[in-house]
Length: 169
Image 1 (cartoon, rainbow, N blue to C red):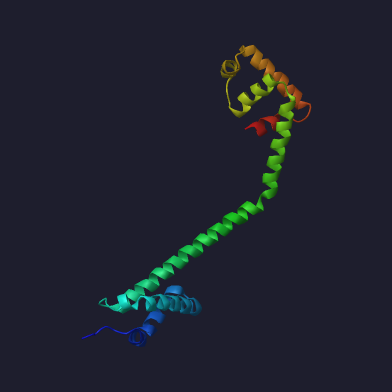
Image 2 (image 1 turned 135 degrees about the vertical axis):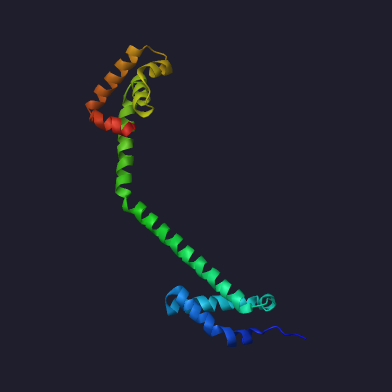
């Protein structure tokens, strides 16, 4: 004796309560209608399994709830991604300007003698002290101070020393 409910019987008894639930859940008639339709398509595909549970209406309502939660999550994730993308696209001039400044500084540093360039990079990029730079370069601390001083003097003729320190950080 088979007392399982058919899908058509399920629709006759549970469609209207399921639709009302979806309207309250979604907040608007159109979204609720789409959610119910999607859920019922999925339920019809698995009806053999669903019809065997004690309360198929509760099972399908849970399916509808899970679909709604998934849609909201996807929507929020998509919105966050859009905001992030807009923020990135809103600042291309700043990023481009920063790249241009770094390229300009790289060109200036390449014009310096190797020891001056190394001393400046160690000081302003790595934040090393005179003593640490001297050990790094294998020279006396006085030579480090001289190299930094001469390097900055050369760079000052082409740009401000403040800009150089800013670019190196």
